[in-house]
Image 1 (cartoon, helix red, strand yellow):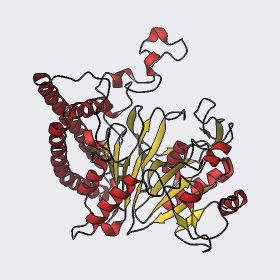
Image 2 (spheres, rainbow, N blue to C red):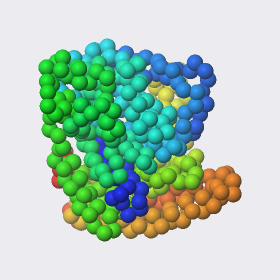
Image 3 (spheres, one colour):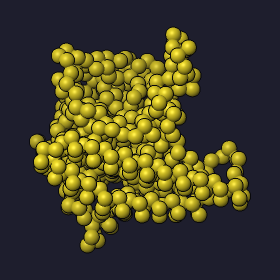
Image 4 (tube, rainbow, N blue to C red):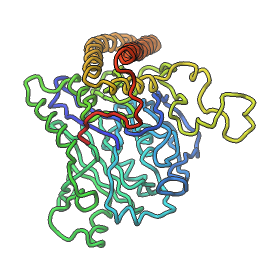
Length: 474
């Protein structure tokens, strides 16, 4: 389902907005930095879903643009048959951040979706925005135009949050195969949690309202179906699940609102808590991501905070647009990667269909950050009362120190970029990020070793097949 949280700049101690959240899928996840690329004229890209998807369709090709932006993203290997690699978003060199969050459509729309649907899937849309958009408003228009021209392949309804340093937009794409979508602007005083994504009332009688955008056919379609006749046009009630803000959304939005009313307002530490709290984050969270939506003098200074799995069991570390290397431990590994269970890293199998691993043998010879953090999560759950507070405190102490270090390294990189020392700036950003990602992983491994020792010396491991979990609100 995933989780997204946007906080406007007027509510924060840093004076800029934040976009945070996590992806909510069970398969493997890995961190990627995709360079800016130029593409040949007439190049195309494959989009959509295949016939083996849970809601089947037909893969099609659409034109690629001549140049795509550099961006940071997390990819993963499976969700409802959508072709891998899949992404829920990230951050691009122009400061556009993306979070993808499930948002179901009403049953009639799901049922009327063609079995041979064509068009871009949710991951295609997230990736293309990272590749092409220079603002969040432009992101909405790019997605709207692509859906209108090429269609959308749905798994039952979806949403995105697109954000930049000035504003953000929550955009809902509805099932049905008729290109329905709606978008609402989030401004400097906004607090918006999505799980699922929702939009309530749209002022359809106010033409050209700057805070709302929607497909040309949205209102007419609903009238033709008999779902709307007059009065307020509540998008969630008419086209969604009709539940409005779910309990978890209400809880976290109220918590953030109270924090924003304090004199010190909302800090990065508060946002880390909002993504880490076990009330919201557990085994389903595939990774954590926090994007500071500031507008630096140089695009290379844009960054995000990354945790390899849900931040309840993994620390955050900085990743910069201005770097070009990530550690092998954070790349794609075979652990939980769909299809790898029948593949080999062995040249004798290279002539047999789909039997060669898609993972580099060199990368696979390193430890997997995702596996190590998952192991820590399950160790914490063996004795939540004792272990969770210990891990959380160590993560918080590390991150408090790391925030100061990161500010210093950004200032150093800024000085170098002003002197046109781009290569040197890249080197120090690479070194700093790689060291911190690895140090965070070492902390996870130390915690795991100590927790395992404690368990073996006390009650031992519970071998019941019924898993333990946090008491979550959703």
